[in-house]
Image 1: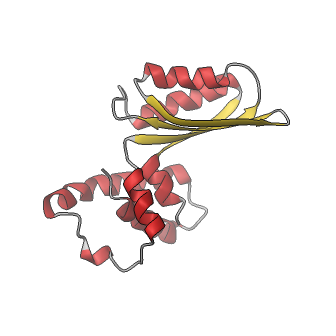
Image 2: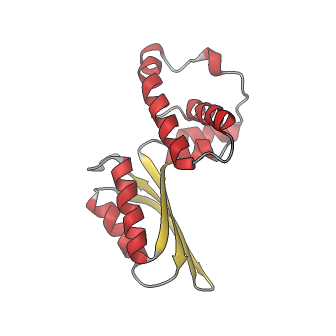
Length: 159
């Protein structure tokens, strides 16, 4: 399981260098690459990385860390409501062998909004490929689809 506190700190450091106008996708990719480089060290030496322990953590953060994972993806869908949106997104996930863990959708005055938490642990493709397939399906459906690993989503929204 990913160390969400470390991801948060890496994300915060990247944004402090690049500024808040930095491209979110570029920040996500950079933080992912940095994390993959330090992850073997953490696995070998344990998760106590004392040099990063300066920021306080709250009990909400602790419970949030335990619930999030790099094996889940947060998928947000927005657009004008019409039949087939849920089916289109669900079909992409089913084809990729991903499970829907949680789903919430609403329609307000003809505007469609949906958030899905998907388990990607058995996915047959990388998260980058899955995100690109979802983006293309969104274009075909006339909606915007944003997808991000849950641990990165949580860390980036703490910044």
